[in-house]
Image (cartoon, rainbow, N blue to C red; front, side, top):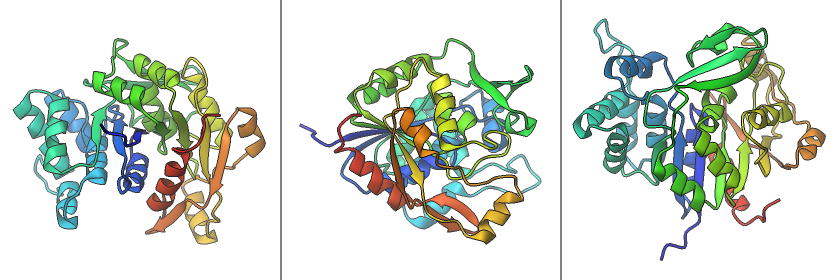
Length: 320
């Protein structure tokens, strides 16, 4: 009988791998549910040419949960720079595409890749089909395509998925029903986090789940998506895209950021996300404020070990 705690981590982009790297060293069962709305770069090319879900975010999650030599990890993440058709493709994306072709199914291909990489946990796409992410802007204009939405540089009113008949994988539904903890984020709010909640049955299963649900909030705002957003603004947007609020807690950073780094981000029109504790409490959330960041090459990232420790502490908490 497996009595290990079960954690479901939901998201995409560069944020979800940080959560997974922090959790994988603990004796828990992990299921990662990953957005498949990407339409740019290597993922977009493979999606269009092979008619498969984009593999990029899946690749990053597989690597984060894998148990391989550092050089093999570099190999999977290697991106070709050439004048040929390989230009821009990462080897990991090509391997997932090849395994999809061999097995005849994207989910089976990802599963085989998981076995090859000795992945700690299960990695599932939010949907087993290519989907299109669209956004309705506050001025009424519509932008379709995940990579095009932030570039529109307009205030987003809501996002949606096409087609309207998307269904979650049975494995995802089962994982959510059995979960003790569900995490959401960090990552681009409208293009990496919320798309997972737009798969109707998936969102309803999350809402109904008796698991504790924690949102790992972004540390910095993102131009074209969350300009001027506070932590409670992030939560409000999540709540607007589901039938009712479901989060129990929010994890926010209280570690100071150096002036040099702030200046660099300001040049990209990004700033620290203010933690408006009173508003968060009024949303019924337990606010977990702690040092959460590290700086690598002038870029702020979540500290995997810190995130892992805090999330593990939430496994023993009672529901709010």
